[in-house]
Image 1 (cartoon, protein in one colour):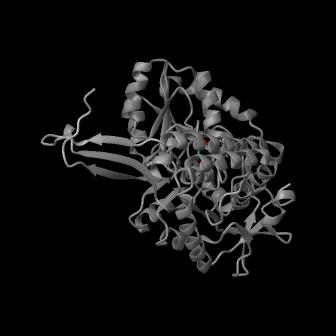
Image 2 (cartoon, protein in one colour):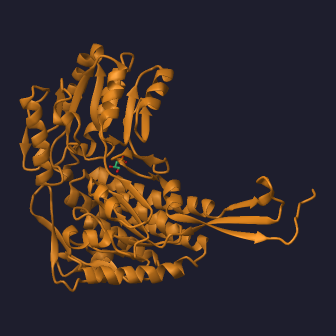
Image 3 (cartoon, protein in one colour):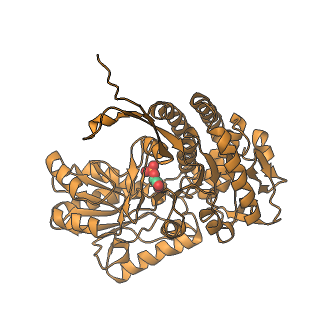
Length: 497
Ligand code: G3P
């Protein structure tokens, strides 16, 4: 159970979880806490420490000192510790998954999957890290005009320093380790600021790293109010890199952060373009999986269907039939559709639904909401003047726009301020390739719904969807800088063979 057994030391008394710094679980001197509301019961489930700015300063100092020693730790040893943490994480998947269910209403099975996927991600990162960080480049000067072979250039990848990791509520464990593991294998230290909803899951995950035996101060996790420590963290002079996943707060962070590398993933309005020759059963299954899994609260969810008019009736009928089969209820019962993360999120979704109603969208189901629980809703005949055609509901509401040409679909996709992923369904691979090239998104899936994984695939958004590329290899590279050493010879030297 969460907060018991091995995890008892992360809890202060009965209710408030501690924060993690200097290899120890601590109570904040602020004496204050932040409540985490269970999206299903809408009552306080857990509390976490409201860390102060002074505590953030202390953590930054610790992380800086610990990083210097960690950078001198052999690569194989860093990998060994990561493998150990991955094993502990997977072994304790049950209590961590329990927190995910209570804090973010993720269905029970998906919660377990998130933890197991996270363990696999950490192990893969350890393996990939020893390979890609174990090699550098060797250049000779005489390949550039006018030079003799008098200079040998050795390049290697070195750590950046302190990485600030800010994951979102929808994957507080997986999108935390996708930042932590690459940072650590590359020789960086970590300051983690988990989302408030999801903080307790993240603290349990951090304890698995603690149990693995990483050096003191290398991994730190501060919790608290964004208004108190959010900007303070992102603008802190001790931070050498920020890896952020979330909403448009990321745009504000990128404007305020100093001259440091940024990795950002800020959401999407992923379009699903359906051509006349598509396998409509395959499309319908992918729309359900892509649009409604975790109640649509995924950056990579299908967020708008752009279907050719000639097959639209048939597709909508198939999707409607599948929507009717989705189970709706609490995450503990492993329902397909569970409460969205907060009341404000539910209110926002409702605003989009009302706007679509007023402007004449066809409701394939009746709109129904109880508390934060919103029943799955397919909106047909959505037009570009409706907000839902452009905005991310981050909930189980999916708009269908009927199009008369492929160009119209591509135009709608590209007119969005987002550019994360998109998908196209057709049996004609040549057409699919042309459409993929024309879509201004970081990834295009052909004949499948958008998705980030497998976690070693590159993952990136363009426009307001983000900066840089993620995926295990890209994240390791992003969290390093190139260092070169040039050996200058007094006379040209050539290998003679
Ligand atoms: O930030 C990415 C996340 O929201 C979606 O990840 O694995 O569900 O495609 P995934």
